Amino acid sequence: MTYQERNNVVSILSNLAISAYILLRLLDMNASGEFNGPDAVNVWARMVIWVIPLGILATIAGTILFNIGFAIVTGNPKPSFVVDERDRLFERRGMMAIVGFAGAGFVSAVIALALGYSALVGFNIIYFGMAAGSMGADLVKFFSYRRGY
Picture (cartoon, rainbow, N blue to C red):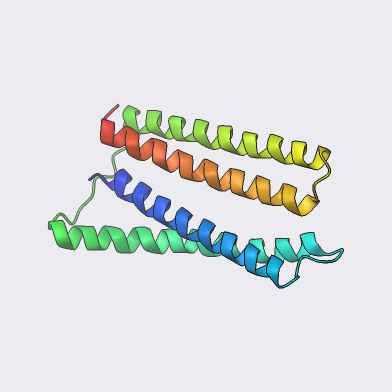
């Protein structure tokens, strides 16, 4: 497994864990009535704003720990950091996935708002559209590396 594949695996697992946490937290906050009232979007934003940097830190820590563990298990301590044309191609494919999912999430949120749903629903659609885009990009890159082209 290449260095890039290992990083994609960690990113996929982090994304799944963070998205699951956000979803469970949103359901819990909704059940407890925290979104009832005029400041529902503010409450949502305060919850999301600290989860994003924690998710980034969790991904970084997971990547470091996973690569250390992989090096210990395989006995290959030095990963290759060389980036070639194929890596750039896979990165572009991943970016197309992000743009596609994030764009679809934005358009879906606008449609939901036009149909009368609350701004809170719109923000959730945008957030999960972007999360799906990140997951899609990581999956595209991972399968591209597995396939080899």
